[in-house]
Length: 139
View: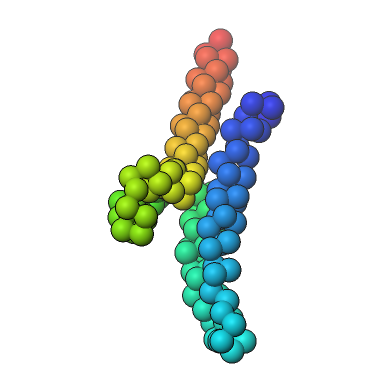
């Protein structure tokens, strides 16, 4: 395995883990002083549900890159309007809302595209190997 193929293999996985960890940071706002410890832990676990779902999709994408890549791209594209509207209603700034979309949604679109490209590269590589074997057997 070459350095370039190792990089294309690990890059989407590492970026996805980092993006999931970033999304998980938002769960920390579930802690309130007036809530009991049990309520705080329940709220924290509820806030982590998106991270759990994204982790399950990453586990799928680890084995089935094309399916996982398509799901990540779809998640990034589908959630973008909701994130934009939510932030625009809070800030009344298009620029701020677009910036927040680029931080929250774009990493998952990028990860999905990288998974898809890695899948296509791997398919092309195995087709080339099969063609070489067929040529070698012909002689």
